[in-house]
Image (cartoon, rainbow, N blue to C red; front, side, top):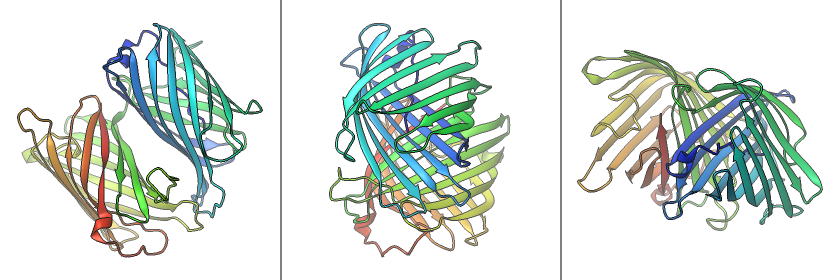
Length: 438
């Protein structure tokens, strides 16, 4: 997959002085008659010591899914630095890690690349252009030099029309491309047509919709988060990436309708922390809630949720479940550090695993002169297994709330053979969470 760089207007000076977070989630159908899903979580922070500079990090993936939930999934993890040369010109240096896997299918050949690119950006009004060069570092052999050209144009011909494009010239021989034409609708929703030729993947056309966390009131995205946890003593997994977002489709006094889309990706252990980082499986939870305000400051909701576990690069069929029930909480969003004590309790029926129980407990304090400190306990249970998490954390930041944490976590997987019994030390984890609310 090719990540299209987001156009940044020359007059948008807040990019260089304020933290920024953005979400874009795409879904639809492609010309190979597969459904696709592509979320992108983006974060950037100004560098206080270098005015007009910022660091940024992106996590995204493109999953193409057949009717049996099989298909290629491309992961991108991008980190870099950008500094302004003038009001219209900036220089960017970034490292882009790419890998391609296949769900529920034996896949002996995993494409793994690292792009190191230096790029010059020129931005004027609604137009942004980029030109970059760089080498490939490590990864699969046969990829050496890279040239990248970007051309993005917002609000041309029609106020709602935009174009994003990127061309990659690999080894000055093979050309890959990605071009996207979109029409903006209300509340940060776009419909788009994309044509793309990604690494060793046939040319494909994508038709779908994209949800974005645009400026108010043009958005339906309520919140999103990303978390990375490290397991120092676990022989099977070394990392767990998770994240998700919430859509606020209805928000009126006394009632709301919410949609939550979450994912978890456990990363297999290698010979070291910085060795090959390949996902073991993709786990999704997609749910809806119709919420009503109750007396005593409580909120009650009817919920329905679909969970699916899709092993990666193994010929193991996915496994899924559907649950519905009632939920009660004492604040609108459990993850916000609002009340000293917060909770969320859900109980219902699971059509595959008999019952569905969920418990969230949280507590935090704000010591004078210090950032907030807190702890959380989470349990998900059904007749097949339990997921248990406890962590202690600190929290700082406003536009992007950063929470470093330490704790223990045991996650149940549904698809595949039963994992070996774990020692308690294998549950120990430490990491960082990023939260953004709108």
